Image (spheres, rainbow, N blue to C red):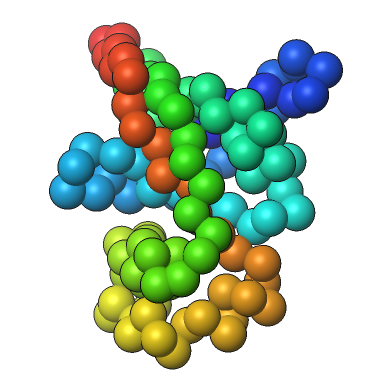
Length: 118
């Protein structure tokens, strides 16, 4: 669950899939017309909760909008493969047109605090 802040200060939550990159940052695919994208671009402080029964992990961090290629296509190819959207990692060069059509981008979240509740 990705939590962002609306312009009026109220919270907004979205169910998301994510991937942790080699640097420990979280990658989330987002379309530019969604609330999560608009909120994170305007106010980059976000949190992501990963439940596991009663236990859960909460990651607080700063979101960065990745909306230009080739990085957008590279990170999305990684996400598609990790989340099972493709049988194998697609060639980033072949998905740029699809990403443009879907207005798909990536939020890259750098953790500032991580909590685990058992």
